[in-house]
Length: 536
Ligand SMILES: [Zn+2]
Image (cartoon, rainbow, N blue to C red; front, top):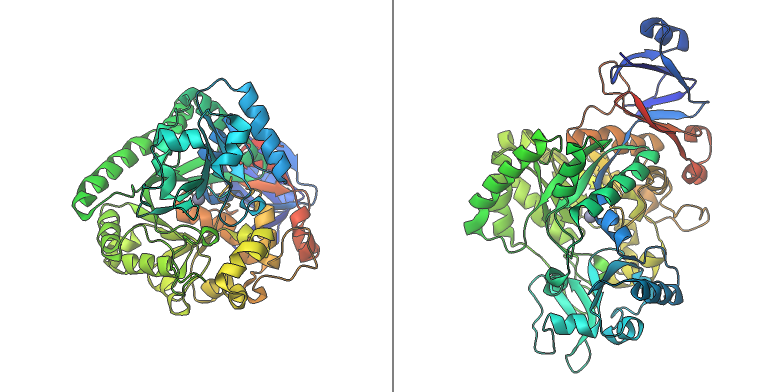
């Protein structure tokens, strides 16, 4: 019987700071919350003690949407994340190619703001890697950069039509430039030699440890399926669970393939139920389907009600009538639906899908829409009415370089105040959850919370806030990132109360005591999962 006494903390649970400073844990569960003396009396004298040193103790953060598998595979490939200049991008690609013997150069993480709006070119990549095929995803994973050899391997030329769910950037003569948007990536990515599952599992274990160190005790792998050159990460998760190596509460969402038709719904639902059963039995709950309805604003692939400057409305990957058949069929089988929607038209289609579900079926699952960059005003109240959780990526809700240089010029600066309307959702009674979309953005929850509260990039205290009226109180943001996400993913109540799982994040300070501009300086100091201290 193992027990743990966490003392001298500022305790936060269920949206409030508690009148208590200690938490007692026995056999993985919280058994007492109160003063040090009360909790020690409840625990007995043999407990290990962890001094929180006046730092904030919260339920463990739960990242409701990330891609640990994708980030793990990125680390095995040519990793361009964080490269701040074009010269650095070039140098990383050149040196990776020089040291790699594989037939393909594969990788990603390049910053789209380093290139013109039309994206990078095949000729540029040819100059770095020669005639070996190369395929490099951008940091958002919504676009890729292919060289001439990769385009040739996929038989892409000026006569290749755009797929229905994507776009090839083209020169004036119609020849492809090498920048592939959304579903156009799929013209090349099936040719990429897969990574070994054991290598992926090792890399996944490593990034999961970094997530734990950041205070994340549970998460949702946001897409389990073959897409954009990534394998289905279920195999790596199951391998780690079989070995007992994975710490933290992992869940996942099973990818809905783009080519699904109405005739294929029954078979897809049956297969999803089956996979969810197998995964759950192995300790990996995946009773959720991931339905990606649109792209992103920056490549004009988010599906908008109002047109982009070129008159287009973006892309819609699934017709509304198909969504309105698929979502009820999944919910009826006990499978929740996790929608990717950035544009207001995509959000609207998703809500129409949830509206088509009988309320008894809807109440048995936790449906959600992630990303939510724009929501039509009339749709905000539908989240609460249709029991749809808003799965927010708060780190995006500020005027960072990408938003200033690309997003706002495409949407119109007058829409800046409409972006990521988290407070409006909250006021309309929507349940909020939070996540990072890592490796697209940092998974440090304190950086996300900072932006949710200030609507400014961390460290830019004088920056113009993005839609200041949509900022959330610190209590609300923390509650969404802990209890809200835990509730969404079905991994416990996400509170500090007797009986709850003892998943805790212990910060190095109490951000309630300082200015909001300093929230981003908060660091996670220790993490507890099921009563075990897993990161200090
Ligand atoms: Zn994502």
